Every structure is written in structure tokens, then in C-alpha cells.
Figure 1 (tube, rainbow, N blue to C red):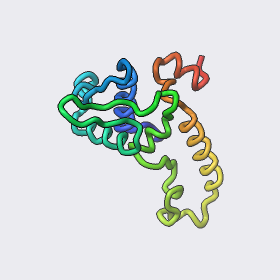
Figure 2 (figure 1 turned 90 degrees about the vertical axis):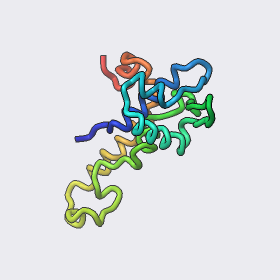
Figure 3 (figure 1 turned 135 degrees about the vertical axis):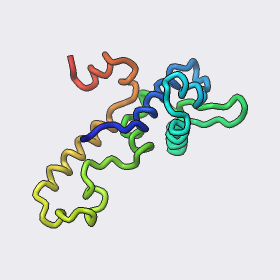
Figure 4 (figure 1 turned 120 degrees about the vertical axis):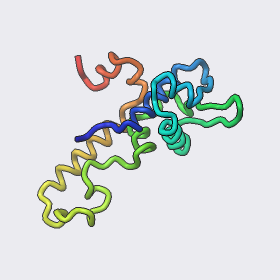
Length: 144
């Protein structure tokens, strides 16, 4: 089943929370963890992944915290997924053909590659600003 992992969900929640801050004010991992009931240790790892790319900035110190590096309009769902989970691959052979015993005789390789390309195009074309409200997201995916 193709679905967003909990780590990606937590990354999106954290980034939406950061976006809601005034003028790029900092937010702490503890604040996000408590506000959204996210396990602190896991959230810390997710925030580290986002900062490494960097989609968010980590500010150290007693008044430290996190803030977005770019506006949500300039960050895509694909970037977040890739930062937290690594490359998006819908079939194991996409990353390493040797891991699939069917690869030499596979009759679905080309359609799977096409689905992969369409999925990546969609994910890397979907700005996080569409997550600001459910009505915006519905518009982005064409739901009435």
C-alpha cells in the first residue's frame, strides 16, 4: 500500500506549525511535540532530517528552535518525503534491479517506471502551501 509514513506526517505537521508562526519566529520541538501529541524522540529525528537538507533551520541555544528556510509555496511534498524517507520508489527494482528476481523477465517494468515518473512529477510539483487548508488541498488535487 502506498501511503505517507508517520515520519512524513510529523514532518508536514511540524512545517505547517512553523509556517503559522509570525515573521519566522522560532518554535521548539517540545512545543510541536506537546501541541500535536507526537513522540519527542521521533520528532527530533524528523526535524534533524529536515534541517540537514535544509528545509528548516535549526537555531541552537537556550532561545533556540526551528523555522522554515523557505516559504511553503517554494517547498514541495516530494522534497519533504525525500528528506525524511529517502528517494521515492514504488518498486524495489527502481533503486536496485539486482534485488528483484523478476527483473530479467519482468513484463510490467515500463508501466511501473511511468507510474513512478508521474508520481514523482506530482509530488515534486505539489507545494506545501496547498496543505494550509483542506479546501486548498482539494483544489490542488482537483476534488470538488
